[in-house]
Structures are given as structure tokens and as C-alpha cells.
Length: 398
Image (cartoon, rainbow, N blue to C red; front, side):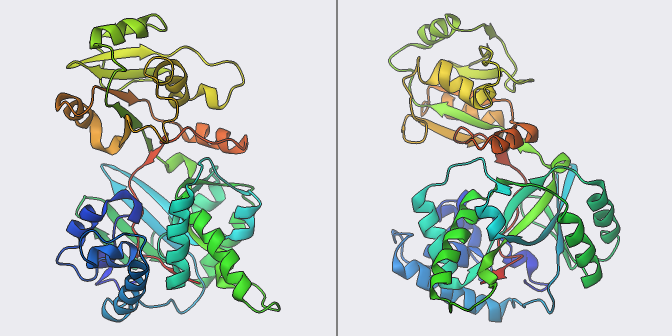
């Protein structure tokens, strides 16, 4: 981990929320930014393939350089940490440490998202090349008072580092002494299930990296560092999920009036609606300079996935009316994280780049857990978690 003096300059947004050009801009003038490690193509010529051999070689070289220059120091004992995020008047505090890869593979650590092989390939190679997991997985669990009490007590001590990033998010980390680490670890053993909220590709890549590194390890080797992955566990009551909104490039040959008429054949449509829906089952539509409210048809009883607004929108609007059958591959639809606000949706449509925008009601943590418990997969781009954990603050060497 970085020293208290260098933490703010090392900390970087997650590798997968920025493009190469955005990463290059964020890291400009800051040689300590962890983006030089997580997105090493920014230090190679423009146009470099981000999956080229040279990128992983540069990442490893930059990692070794950062260890010396930041500097990064390995902790002197096995311990847990607290990681608190504060932003816009709310805060959440998670317990950071190592999670079992066996529990991940056995689904005691549950998932709700399908991962992409190309993204897994990238982070698996990154981990194996660096022999490190450089950013944590964001997990949640059903609230436990006995854990909350210990966490609140530990927060009364002085933090190891505490800084506010350029986006206004305050990041505070405490190093817990061995006695508190032991007590917290013991209480977490009683938690039956953990749920991945954000970071499915990191976790899946850590599992694949383990398989590769296990093959190279001696047959007699016992538990190894790669048998764990780095995570931060937040109680469910503190986790905020923002909507993941949709924008479409055309109305499948219809005018705005014809599109609205097609919608009215299938569901109630109200004029002069709020840009942000106020309950489940509602979607706000922006088209032709105006906001409309859509009341989605009710789901069938017992259909866990079919009760989600993103799936209802897909079944009743995107597929039958707009002909967008697979949102993972169709180039006519794009997604906008809720952190950008509804004004971003208006701007995209008013610019002429898109024909319409759908403002969604956010998924709840209970819905996320229900889908995970049913061993099902959320519709693509259903959840946006904010604020984001930073890369580079906690690193697990494997």
C-alpha cells in the first residue's frame, strides 16, 4: 500500500471505467498515478493495442518503478482494513481483506453478472504478469449488528490515510491491529453468503489466474497467496445502487409520434413526466425534447428476472418495438451510468446522436441478492455503483 503522503497521488479510478484517452488525461503530470500500472498503454504510442504484449510488459515495469518511487510498502502483518467512502452527504464503510477463491468457485460468494472472456483474458494476464491483484472486488452481505459494532469501534482510532479525490469523494483507510482483525474475521465466518456487487471481471480473472499459477506450483504446495482475492465487504444497508440508463440511436424507422403511439398500444404513457422515475415499474422516456412516463406491464408472478425493470423494458419496448433483441451486441443502444444525471440523457438526444433515452429506477440491493440466490443473471447494465473504490490503495501480491 502507498504511504499516507503518497496515497492521494497513487489512487486511481478503476481501470474499466475510463477509456485510454481518459486514463491518459487523468494521469497526465502525475507519475505516481496507478493508471500507469492498470492502463499501461497510456505510456506507449497512441494507437497501441491495449492487449499487446508490450502493454503488460510496461505495466510490470511501471509497477516495479512505483514500488520504489511512491513508495509502496508491504504490510508487516496479516490484517484487515477498513475502507470508508464519503460523497454527497452519505458514507459507507467496508472491511477490506482477502476472500477465499474456494468460496468464490463454490458460489458461497454469489454472482449476478455474466463476464466477457476478452475482459477476463486481459485482467488474468495482468495479474499473472504482475503477480498482483491491484484493485479490490466490491462485495456486500446481509447486515450483521455484531460486525457493525466492531467496525464503529475501530473507526474511533486514527486512520492510516485520509484524502479527498478530485471528484470530491473522500477515501479513508484504517489498518486494524491483529486482535481486532481476529475478532472481525471470526464474526465474518458466521456470515453465510457474500454477494459480488461490482467487480465480477476482477473476481473471475483472479480465479483464472489461480488456475494458471496453481499448475506451475509444486504439487506439494499448500495454500498460496493466489488462493485468495482482494475484496471490500460492505453491509447491504449502506450500499447505494444508481440507475443504469439507456439511449437508442434510432426509433426503428418511426417518427417520435409513431413511437409513442406504438408504446400506448402496450402500456400507459403520460406526458410531462419527471426525468427520474419514482418507483419500480416506471421508466421515464425522453424523446423529441420532452419527458414521458411509461408504466411497464406487470411481471408474471414468481419471475425473478422478469420483475426487473430493465428486463420488462427489454420485453415490452426494446425488442418488440425497436427491434433491439440483444443489448450486449446491438450497436443501436448504449448505456449511461446514473452518476451522470438525466441532463446527460437530454444532451445526448438533443445533440441528434441519439433518438431517445430511457431513465430507469435503480435496482435495489434486495433485488440483486434475490437474483444471485436464484443463480440467475441480471440483465446487462442493470446496476451502477457509486462511489467507486480506488485502484492502488490496497494490493494483494500473488
